[in-house]
Image (cartoon, rainbow, N blue to C red; front, top):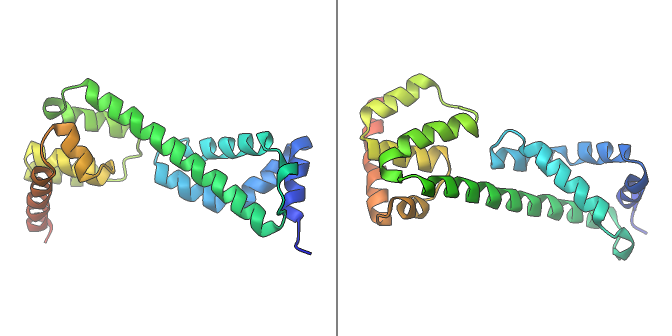
Length: 183
């Protein structure tokens, strides 16, 4: 017979909320991984809360396979689906705020505002200044949106109402210019 220790922990969690701490510690690496991918400050706690809510709402008596492997898979799926949900909401929020403003004229200011509000600035100010000084405004916007904020070439093209080829050519020109500066 397979171990059912994790299933018992889930059952006990319904009455004893402190058991959630044990469960949270057990799945902390996975929660941290997806929180890093989300890239905003409270992502870890949002994922924890989502996991906690899902497990409290779940009718565990309907689960047929109660082995530890099945429970790990079940919890993993909850975390992954929560990640996708938060990722989609975060992306929609960012896109909504980008479409409110005329992007070609104010994308630089918006990028600066965005990185100050949502992301931890992992680039030094001097390297950003060097990048800004050696690129045109359009190339700088493409590099910031693509590499710093994680937008795809297609998404950037849609935001700026130009072809993907135009954005890709701008990215290539920008990378060549930066290669000349740094190499």
